[in-house]
Length: 344
Image (cartoon, rainbow, N blue to C red; front, top):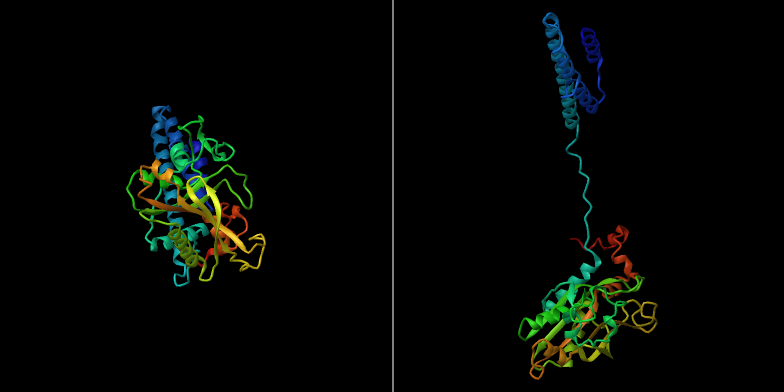
């Protein structure tokens, strides 16, 4: 044991660590709970009483020298770290943090919401997982409507009946919940994410964002609908933007229309965004079908209303001239940095 202690003593005296990691390894090797000194003390228990008188003193001195060596080196490293910190010039300018930006869809959605808020509309929200009644039946969708097919809707539970559960295909379900749980008048918009079983491409995605609106009161007419949407377009795209309504069909509105605006990119001259027609469709709208009002417990003989719905991605496409819908969900920093001017 004496020879072992002499050998370890020589190693400790010669030890000169280059960094704190090597010093920590030294501590574990000699002073740790499973280290050399702990092992020597275990061996010391088995030596004879006569040897203990000599080795006991030597072993204690060896332990003290190892602890002193470790403490000395530790203080040297700590003082060196403090010295390096003191050498920092605190008067130098710091490294600035890069300022983030809001997502283009968030920017567009906020702008749309603000416009309708100024017209007296409130914001309503609802669940993204919906039952058949709120997503289809209450909105006058017939049983054979193609939207009920699995090729068009993401079903979570499908039994070909009223207990079908699916990811909502539109935020019109929020309109049903509002009318079921309240009394007219209603004046609200419903922003949110919706899901449809479509192939992902530059012009389509399996999820996107909608903002739908609902106004129900006595004596609401199609003229009210047209004037509301005309004002919205002028606020969003600027005065002079042309608007036209084309007859269309939706199960939950009658009469129904699609609204086009003059292309904001080519100013009506014709481009690939408007398919060289000079017009771009931005939303669908119409008068709320009396069956929908009755389904929600509202007297359709006393109340009328209008509804509309638009895709936020389509509005953003026209506003920022973005030609690929996939860019909105890929989180490519190079794309998002283009909206730096809109600070958080």
